[in-house]
Image (cartoon, rainbow, N blue to C red; front, side, top):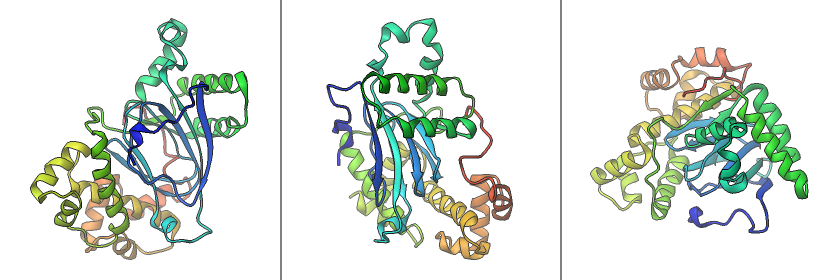
Length: 300
């Protein structure tokens, strides 16, 4: 799938909005020319935005800008044929010319202009903003004619005034992917997400990309802005976070379920990535949930 070529908005429409129902979300790493607002209503998994990796759960609301690679990869159980496992979400696509430079350049549009600029790194909204924006997004797909345009403009205005957000991709992240790179990275992502609970070697990942380990290491760092080893650790720790909050397993069980061979290595990497010990993480987020109810900050 070369999603950069996919047409998302009809030439006769100002923007597109869809209420999604599927066994799992689109599992392809991709990017496109449109701005995208997406809220998860049902489903769990791992979200990739540029060089940022994080678990997602119901309520996850993210705004991405043009050509920012992204992927909501559903957890493995969503691909195992369990019909009780379903995903649901609402997605909105629009082009920058929806507003037009004649309006965006004016003082009245300053906050929306700033909001759109932040989307180059991806924005995750939290707290009241997330709840209210999700409500508005769910109401938008059935609207018709100019009512839907007004609803989107009001939504963008609402988001532009919020300080309840996190920026996702690193400040220096730049998309260097070409269309053909998405296929190669999709193979790697799919392999890791299917096998992260097992032992994964650099050699096996390199073979998927039809590269030598040395060439693959260089390629992966260039395109993901991190090493393959760091990427794999983030996937495993993200899954461990989910297990800590959803299941009554002890830390050792969670470590092995998440693909770690030793408890000491799990504890060390967990603290490096989350700044918590596993038990402290469970105590902190067991009631608040992860990640939507974490306190907002605006720069990371």
